[in-house]
Image: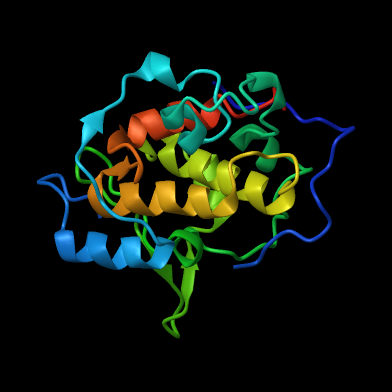
Length: 206
């Protein structure tokens, strides 16, 4: 899905938030730590194919076969294009990607975004708006941009965006740490490209 045009009739909430892929396989100690934070348990892996992703508003619902909100027109999401428009994240917002997701994206080629610092050692980027502006060359699959969009959707539309914030954070943080997300109840996995596919089909056309 490409970036969306602006929607002058629909604006985000008033209070916008200000706040390594291991190609060889998972780091079990890191996975145990991350799972203890989100309260889940790792299970056996199985790869999910892209066609299965269509039509679901939550990953858990997709893997369980839950038909609740099984309609892409009702998932409640806005795209990266919406969030980088004048109706989206303010230009003076200094929230960094790492402050939300704990790390920056290392793509399939092993290229990691540069973390920027000022002369005092304070982190100055990449900010959420910087990540939304990256193209596919800098942000492979545009994983970062879609992660930011899903985060903003969950933060600003918690009653109408059916992928809850804790699941958005879990999806992104696991991909950053291990290269894939593992569903705790089924053991099915999504790699970075598949996570982007899932997030894209939660957008309502904005």
